[in-house]
Length: 417
Image (cartoon, rainbow, N blue to C red; front, side, top):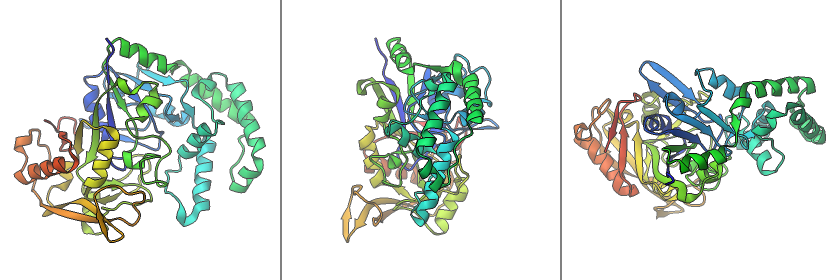
């Protein structure tokens, strides 16, 4: 009998707190598999007095019995991955990297930053990590895959030829061609550090599913940053929705089991682009301060605002969500009232769906009475009545149960319903 893989997906603009829930669910799963994204994303996980910031390694690494797979849908920066590996011991036999995942090299970051500079005030607001150029090379069929690291001499020759062919373009952008000898030494170092982890993870996925192993799938960012279904062009360069797990790991839609969507009890966004429920005043500042809303990867302050039920319904439907994990409920502690965006006004008309372009969408709010304290609560019935009413109202608006509620960064401060 083949198992089905449970899936965790972000439902907002990323940074929803997926790491804590993946860590929580990883305790009962045999494998945790990353299917998309790069090191522009980050999970912060707090266990006791220790904080872990993960960018590429699946969150299952914090469960000693779980094994971790990085799928072909990921773009992997070897230098950053190797640095991240240094946090952990004994990864042999617990970590597997797809030989078909694409390699992100330092020149991709140079290209990314040069393009942002050239756009001026039209810049997307990327992290500058090179994610877009790496995915662009993949789609243009000029990228390089992890399996090629096993032959550094051949890969060096390909990259040198690529720069020679595109010299006028790179000169205009201010992107320097790598020194051939230095590049070869760099790639040889990557082979030495990562070679033993590189394998055919597609075959591995099929085998462990046939063995009826418990599998958890995780992506990066959130639905509203999806290349197709997000606020284009202010999106990431990968498929962040649940369907991306299929192409990003080599499994089929029938292999997907329970889908858990992750959402904050409010909203945040990093970078440019439309954000209808953003609060530019004192309440937005309070959300940022109380929620410690600064990027795990970049340190940039996040834009903060109120829960957007319209965007959430959109995300729930796109992903086929079975339950939502509501994160950071405690950040709303102490507010006199809590607002929810229940519709948009676009061109003078009220709509209750996500339009083609959110740029001019104005939020229509419904207010709810606030509460004093939810921090650390671990039983739903112990929450303040107004907090319970808020959660139940959100469930009705988005049509899905809040099956998990987080009331602090601590692993144990989690309500399961």
